[in-house]
Length: 243
Image 1: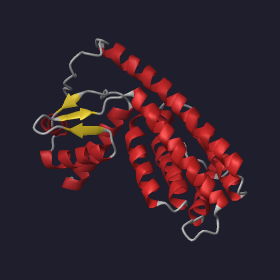
Image 2 (image 1 turned 135 degrees about the vertical axis):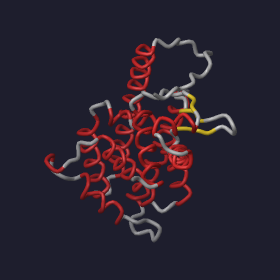
Image 3 (image 1 turned 180 degrees about the vertical axis):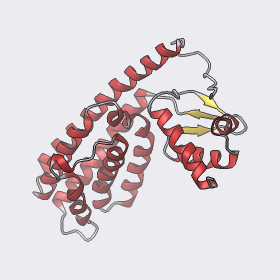
Image 4 (image 1 turned 60 degrees about the vertical axis):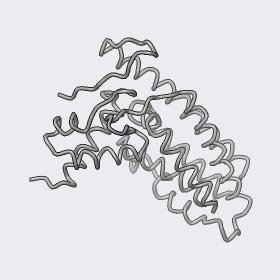
């Protein structure tokens, strides 16, 4: 028999997969009771699962009014990707210009080599795993530069773009490219090549932004079509019935 933590983990993983696969669409609303009924569990593990998803920026709760899958606002994501580029390239420049600074921790980068600078046979193929490692890669670059405030802002940006960034690894062809591009970025950082690392990081983030924008539009259109949903932007949020 599953304990409370196992039930919460089951609900968390299932709902997260539904969001990434667009079985739960941005803007869909549901209650804790809906989820509890679906999994045949009490509301306590459901609430724990939903709070985890909320911390990851995938859902948001309304006081006495249920939960909602966070809507996709592409204009907002454009701004967040721009901020992400600024934070990461600034950190990379610092790593190249001030390697002897007591605030800089380049050992974080050495750890990344074992994950990303590996032959194809040793690379992971699971999209969710690679997505987690991708976040850790970019977080490590910012943290290594030694500015905790910048790292905190970068984490907030990461949380807010996660819902569409994961599309890149679930439906795109980015896993192989991510390994290749991360390896080149690490090589440029190891060589203290400031211009090269800024060029590589900027291109890497921009390519990801373009791809997730395309995939977001494409997947939403497919999901709406399959459900025969109206496309009017002023339509009321759809109440999700599990079953």
